[in-house]
Length: 173
Image (cartoon, rainbow, N blue to C red; front, side, top):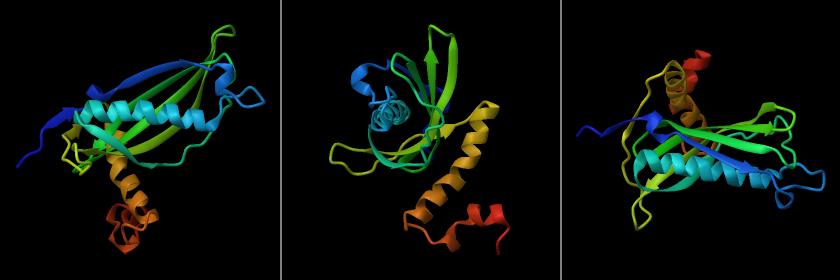
């Protein structure tokens, strides 16, 4: 049976927050845990838009903090599903920090989150196939299978020998 298809652009989320004193550490930078919370919320909304289901966070790929986000900055998070599998979805998140008085905007974070759609009992449920249309969407879609295999290998849920996409990257036999 063919899965329903849905364009990835339909899952796009833009979320904006102001960094307030309660969000910062003693150096007046946004706390990493608060950033992770915001990223998880934006990515979950994106996955829900794609699946029309309740979703749970399954994994978070490397989140690196490139640039500090300061007290008073405006944080903009952009999230979009890159690819879906049977019940899971990979979501790509970009985070921008804007200092409105100075007119500067920098990319501070980027990550991939994986969500699983579940039914009311918490059991995984099928999601629509993600359809990538733009060049950027297609590039993220094409890399998603490799990223998924890497997650599964690192999580001990797949043998490195079974990770065909990863082996092909390194031309391993």
